[in-house]
Length: 485
Figure 1 (spheres, rainbow, N blue to C red):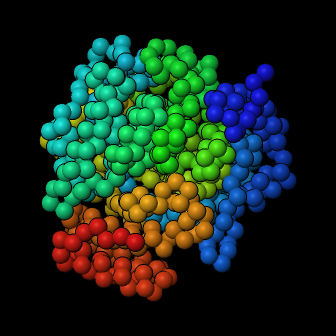
Figure 2 (spheres, rainbow, N blue to C red):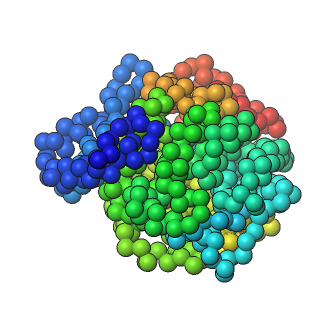
Figure 3 (cartoon, helix red, strand yellow):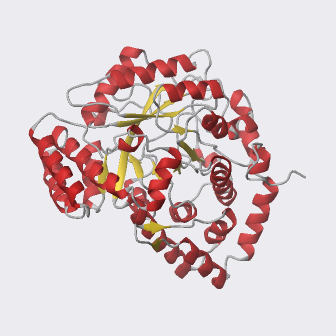
């Protein structure tokens, strides 16, 4: 029997099926053990220190007990602590980004994705560099500063050289006061050499969804193509870190396999990265399977309801307190509103999941022919920004940590010490001022500037507060942009 070893570099040892099954049995046996649940919750709760807060996180077994628990009072306590952790380390800031689809050419046979090679109904498209430039200008005109680029796996149509050229084009576009300051990359598992090339190109986070940690299901769901190799795919983050990328993003596609199995595997993967590399994932995404061309989500019988989805998100926040949690426009406004309170720290806004979906289209005219999945939240970026502020959040377009070298273990050490708030809070306010000044509707401006005035008073360091206040004045009254701590 293969033994569980979080420090191993072999997929079947750090994501160990026997350990997951034992964990699920333990969780089921203890889901009504009130004393144990309270002990786990107390461990998860943020503790106040002289410099901020500290959290111990949870093991995959402890977190799985909480996920299995169906006691209403304990679930409410899980939610309260998730909110406490979110506020302790991320405050009321919500980072905003948008996906940019470069190409839907793909050689894989993934049965849940409309880009699969056998789909003959979806038009295939790959952006030229001029089209990439036009997309970037459209995104800049919306107000975006941070993108996540997406492309199907196709060595002929989407080689690493194409991805690198697109990244260079994106960073080169400066339109009016706009600039993309951080490009995150969500492409297929690749080699250490290619990860080094991505690092040299100046990417932010490398994102790769596992889709499912259940190996048997994984092989069935990915019957053909290079993605069929479970081990190569699962071990990708270790190669990325070997290649110098110290910010990586995990995720599973909830609905493909039983969610409790996926959850345990996801937390085990985070534990593995911490054990081997000294730093866990920078982000964890929580996508759910959605309807798309040639794909009917009802064909998969492991879908999860909104309440279960909320509990998964809250338990992730308790287990990995310092990791960012991302929710996309796959989800409705109502679902996103609830999950923001339970630990989510990043959202997409004004998103298009089609290749070439931004340039030349209004928000109402979004194209659907090359979409990867249906977008449930179809509001404009301005509407999303306004909504966030109305719900007590600060929309942040900040990319300072990445550009100041506060990545990987350096970011985590600042976050764990509580010192990150001295950078993040004023940076969020300054980037929000940029958005309001350059792009926002009059109604959003009015709401936003009132939020900024209020939130400036919460900056506790007098010198930081003074500098931030002056920078905000300069942003409003000039074309000077990109102030940062």
